[in-house]
Length: 413
Image (cartoon, rainbow, N blue to C red; front, side, top):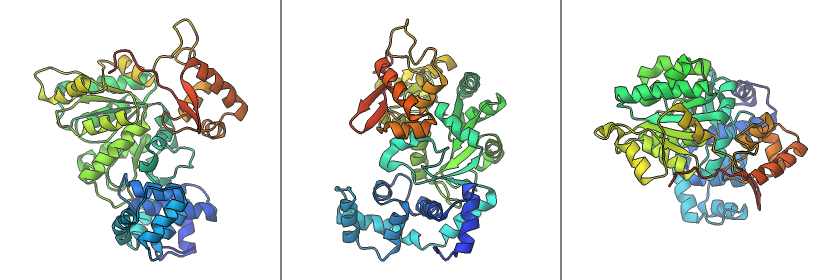
């Protein structure tokens, strides 16, 4: 196997380091292809997602490495089930991707990732954040990670705290109380490592001996913002720093906006603590709402422009008004559909039901075998629990599998 000028003798130790384990030839092909795609397509590229999901990562890479023909590519996609891709769309996509396919930057990114101790996480990995699957065609082909497996596992019980870079003293105080309080309640904290609210959310989680995960809009070898280099180094040591972009890639405005979808998808709920009328954190809120994730916003003084975005979310959108960690935690743990006297999922929840619910998606149906593999439970246990959860109203069987049902919280628009 040779690619990008690397021989098999060079590729094998490099991919072994990036995977953190020995990998066979098929796994090497998958890892290399997905690593390459993180640099070929910009985050959220729908057609790249279609190509990967229909052809598989190695075949998708071969399709653009060969002398590409838009008509042939569109035909292959139609044969694989992607009927809506036209030759014109395929041609524009190839124009975007082709300059990066032969770029030496791919090799440099792999070597730089190995140098800084970054790992490559792909959707089949044990610690892949299952919430990202809800992004479907807009999901990243892979993730670059610096940090602990335990932090990635904690994403199944995490809440995103986001807000303005130009935070006020009020916003930072609320963030500190919220982050520490949620850690005390067993939640991991997810944010974007920006100045202001994000940075305070990470710091408070670390100070409370909690788990925190930072999603970046550039490569994990180049911490951004530079003023948070020490903070991100600490997060990488005790939590995790994650990006869908390969090492060497700088953050851009588009990448920040697309990064926000990962923050929303990886978390059980999103809370906007302080945001101006046009704050970028409202973009994260929009992704959370589109994914069906619970969304909360903290009110501020009506005279404060720094809270105008939060008030807008509460008044015009689906955000619930939340004022303390208990109310924020309720977003991530919606009440059972049963009455208060029955032992529902929200009450007396067992570790098996928690693991099963973590393995279910709100939007993407999964069959019993898939749920069993994701949860680590036996197929018989999964089938029995799914039936009980269906009676409780928190799981439902669709034509293509099972989904998680989130009851509408009282007062939500």
